[in-house]
Length: 65
Image (cartoon, rainbow, N blue to C red; front, side):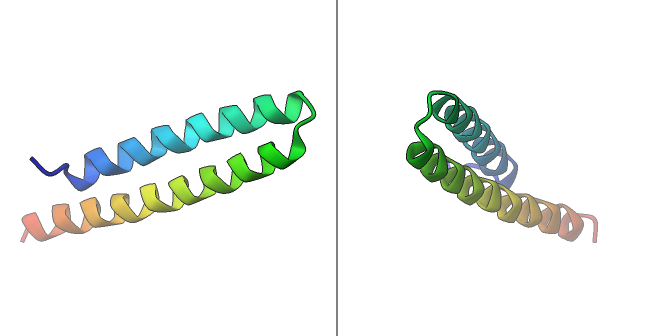
């Protein structure tokens, strides 16, 4: 069964949070290259979460009509 846009948005929000935490840990250990890559990954996940949130909102608005 396909996931709803709400579920996909939540999934990417969680992935972004995890990547942010991993980046902070790597940065704290002095591994700045890994921290940078994880921060980029977190940003990508956040962007996907935003897109799925917009899709969910649009579907919700369409359902009200």
